[in-house]
Length: 129
Image (cartoon, rainbow, N blue to C red; front, side, top):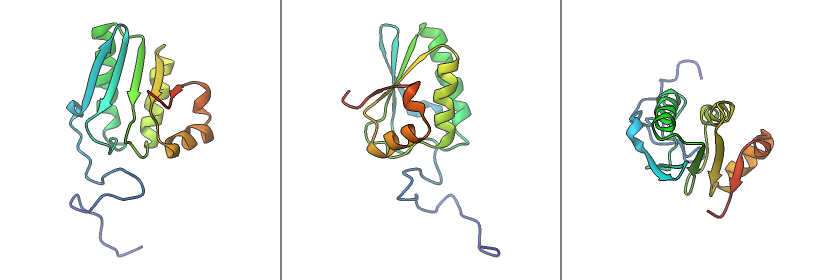
């Protein structure tokens, strides 16, 4: 509302979104496990980076792909509640760069978003990995 104070970094995370309002932008929060030409990307937090962080993660992912000659990027989403729209855009961007993109163990809420956005038709979804 008009006149309300702006949220601060010390405010608590929105319980429904799964994204902390003061999300850390440190790109070292990603973990990588190499499996041949497949890279399995994990998040050290279930709070996926907010929109501000996505560019840094994109740069880190692309650098890793080039350095390790990856053809498949698999994202382990175990425990992750929601993906922000910027992260969905990043997945599409990786796909457009010729990478196969896999989503491992997405939540029911993430699967619903992928169905609504029709991303299930271009991303490989593995609910049991």
